[in-house]
Amino acid sequence: MILHKHFLADGAIIRHEKIGANDVYLLDIDIFTNAESFAAGQFVQLQVPDGEILLRRPLSIADVSGSRIVLIYRLIGKGTERLARAAVGSKVSILGPLGTGFGLECKRPLLVGGGLGIAPLLLLAKRFAGQADILMGCKNAAQMDWPLPLFKNVVKNTFITTDDGSMGMRGFTAEHLPKILAENSYDKVFVCGPEIMMKTVAKITAGHKIACEVSLEKRMACGLGACLSCTIETRQGRKKVCKDGPVFNSTEVFFDE
Ligand SMILES: Cc1cc2nc3c(=O)[nH]c(=O)nc-3n(C[C@H](O)[C@H](O)[C@H](O)COP(=O)(O)OP(=O)(O)OC[C@H]3O[C@@H](n4cnc5c(N)ncnc54)[C@H](O)[C@@H]3O)c2cc1C
Ligand code: FES
Image 1 (cartoon, rainbow, N blue to C red):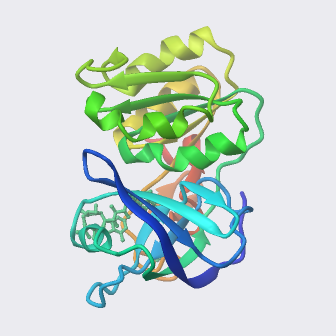
Image 2: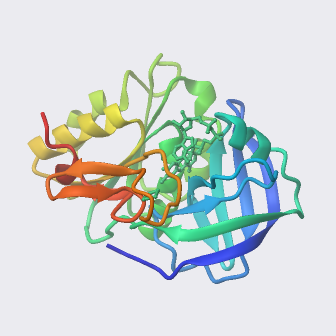
C-alpha cells in the first residue's frame, strides 16, 4: 500500500483536448508540486470549474511528468460536460493524490483494462518500464482510438478484444484471459474496468493461483475517508474505497461467489 501526503492546488490547464471519438478527453494539468512519486492507481478529486457543482469528481491519475498530471475522462454527466468546457490556461482545483496505489512487487505483470478503466493502467505500464503486457477491451474498434497510441511504446505485448470483433479478438476481455494466462507465466494481474469484468478476472486468476489487484469505483463525496459514502464490505469488514482503496486485493473484495 503506497500513500502520499495530499496537496490542494489551483492547477493550470496546459492541454485539454478530445482524444477519442467516443467523448474521451485528456486533461494535462500543472499542479506546481512534484508529481513523479504519485502511485499508479491513485486518484485526484477535481473541482469542476463552474461554481455550481459543489462535489468534487474523482478521476484517476493516468500519467505524471514533473509537476504535471494527466487525467483521462469520458463525458458522462453534468460535471464532466462542464469540465470539458474548461479552457487551456484556466485554473482547476485539484486535491490529491488520494487512495492507495497498485503494488508493484512482481516479475511478470499483466494489466487488464476495460473502457475508461484502461486510463490508470497507463501510469502503471510506465512504472513497469516496458516489461508489462496489457489485455485491453472496448466495445468496438472505434473506441480503441485513444488507448492504442497511448500504450504503443510502454508495454511489451498488447492483446486486444472488442465486443463486436471489429478489432482484435471478438468477445469480452475476460473470456480470452484463461488462454493468455495458460500461454504466459504472469505472476500478477492488475485490473481496472467494469465491475462485472473485474469480478470475472478475479475468479479466473484465483483459479490459476495468480495474485490479482482490482481498482474499484464507487460514488464518492469527500474522497478522504470522512463521509462514509464509499463504504464497501470486504473479507476484513467494512472499508472505504477512497481511503483503503481504490486498489484492493481481488480476494479481499470479491468473495461472495
Ligand atoms: C477512484 C475513481 C477514479 C475514477 N477515475 C476515472 C477516470 O480516470 N476517468 C473517468 O472518466 N472516470 C473516472 N471515474 C468516474 C468519474 O468519477 C465519474 O464518471 C464522474 O464523477 C462523473 O461525473 P459527472 O458529473 O459527469 O456525472 P454525474 O451526472 O454526476 O453522474 C453520472 C454517473 O457517474 C457516476 N458518478 C458521479 N459522481 C461520482 C462520484 N463523485 N464518484 C463516483 N462516481 C460518480 C455515477 O455512477 C453516476 O450515475 C472514477 C471514479 C472513481 C471513484
Ligand atoms: S468518499 Fe467520503 S469516505 Fe469515501
